[in-house]
Image (cartoon, rainbow, N blue to C red; front, side):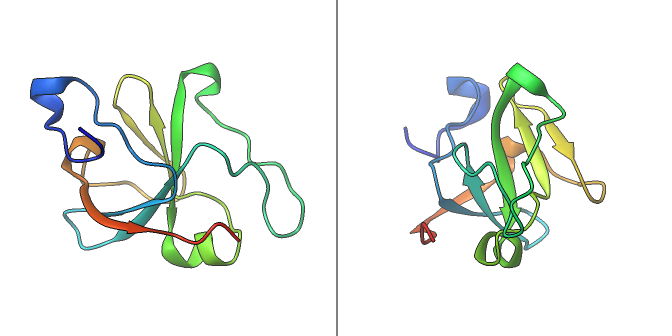
Length: 102
């Protein structure tokens, strides 16, 4: 059930590497477990540590190697890094598109 599984039925939703997701607020986000540095070479450090499932980047931040907007914990909880969120990862809709690797 790639990306579209109902979290209440199947546990935490699996977010595809570089998968593009639509949040209920209309925000478009890119999921990544692999991106670890920004364009200027700074390391992206997780506030969740080993509990990190993946980062969620806004489309602009993804395209220009910026910092992630959110972190998703292994438990399915969302940690906002820039501004408070009004959604949970299980509400993200997989668009079926994949962001470029850069």
